[in-house]
Amino acid sequence: MTTNAEAPKGLLDKFLNAIEVAGNKLPDPAVLFLMLMGIVWLLSWPLSMVDFNAIHPGTGEPIAVANQVNGAALATLMSTMVTTFVTFAPLGVVLVALLGIGVAEHTGFIGTLLKSILSITPQALLTPMIILVGVASHYAVDAGYVLVIPLGGVIFYAAGRHPLAGIMAAFAGVSGGFSANFLIPSALDPLLQGFTQAAAQVADPNVQVSVVNNNIFTAASTVVITLLGWFITDRIVEPRCKKLAIDGDPDEMPKMEKATSKEISGMWAGLAAMAVGVIALVAWLVPEDSALRLNGEITNFGAPIMRSIVPLIFLLFLIPGIVYGYIAGTVKSHRDIVQGMSKSMSTMGYYLVLAFFCSLFIWMFGQSNIGILLAVKGADVLKAMDLPGGVTIFGIVLLVGAVNLLVGSASAKWGLIAPVVVPMLMQLGISPDLTQAAYRVGDSTTNIITPLMPYFPLVVVFCQRYVKSTGIGTVVSMMLPYSVVLIISWSILLVLFWMTGIPLGWSSSYVYTP
Image 1 (cartoon, rainbow, N blue to C red):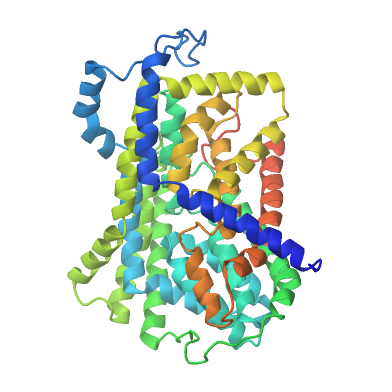
Image 2: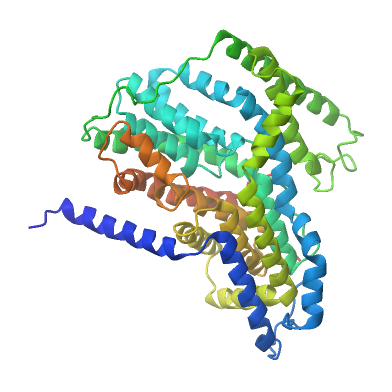
């Protein structure tokens, strides 16, 4: 006989198994882009013979699918392949930003900073601080997964609380709040912006998307995620965790090492160097005739300051990382600094492969005109449905969340969705900035419940150090309340921004006007 408690668990297991089976049947994202490129290539031939009676919104000319299965098209593909790859918008910005972040991470500056913040946090504020630090860890790319999440368990266990609750809280901040951050842009911002701009230019080649087009929304999101995560952890998740007996081997449980006096001194020196850099930048920006302004304006997309966001990320991590390294003793010579940069680049091998195939897919999608055709026809369908703007926005959130259950990579997912969704919504008057913000919400909120997220198995391992019986189902059942509450609340926040006209970020807009 099946009890009421066992029934939901059985349904959850079946749901998770279905996701895992379906996801495992999908090819690697790099191969998926190659396959989609082949599909576009083959479809362009018969579709080029059809009159679709559609008008290009940018040129006003009839849209005709361009046949890619001919000598001229193939010659163009081959002759421009290298240029297409090296000029792929997300490629350079991500690599440059990671050069500086890599140094700060390699020297130990980021790790010491995160551990110091958590070690001095009052017990009553442990939960919100762990979530907040998890969100902030995005500035170090994926460091939060290997540093903050296990620290969440260590700190909760040391405070006499259930360690799995600490791990879940940290996971909620690191992965559930993946697209949130403070006003200062993280490495994710230029990555998403590059895909968004390339997709928007399918409809309008003159569209420019700012790297900081969502930073006000993501800063507000950080507050919302922290407060909601705090409530869910303390009132829902931790009471459930108490039913799980801690039976791990004490010798194998991770322990948080205290920072040495040299590391603390290096951290303060690094923060001081960062503060000096920020003050110098502000002083440079203040004069009306500053070289960083354009016609006296800062937020104009053409202003040098707006085009220098990625180099600023590079410098704001590079300089503190170097200062920390020399004072803490982790840097002996310039070779250690170069090693830190090299180490960060060595982790980008897969991304380079992914970017190569993604760049070719987006290029061919644009050359064939299939992308803009789908966007225009899809926009016509949405116009006929006459849905309220808020419903359309929430629909994009749900679409991304569903895709995220099967495709874990943020860059791969946005590379797949953006070329159709961004220009389609532009035809409805919805700006690329707003579409990108909706993507961020959908992507983050389902990260924490999909077993196909690359770091999900690692979280299970962290939990098994304390509770040996922990499995994928255990983690997903614990994270489900975060996912449901965040996708609803975060979507409401986005709709409120849209309804009240609060800017999503600098040089951003809600409305696209051709």
